[in-house]
Image (cartoon, rainbow, N blue to C red; front, side, top):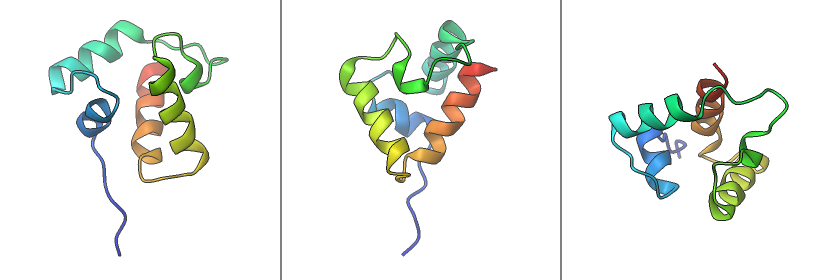
Length: 77
């Protein structure tokens, strides 16, 4: 069975955020750059549920981990 491939739009939908490409870009622009000392799930702009989801998916190296890593990189850059 092949792993599920998620998009950035899917991730934002999963997080309960506006998920259009424009909304994703606006979110990233308004929250970047994220300080290197701050882990993505600990960023102040997440709700506790969003932070818990991000942390769990990263720790479990789950299907969402790759796209979460991409979001992390975009927020730092």
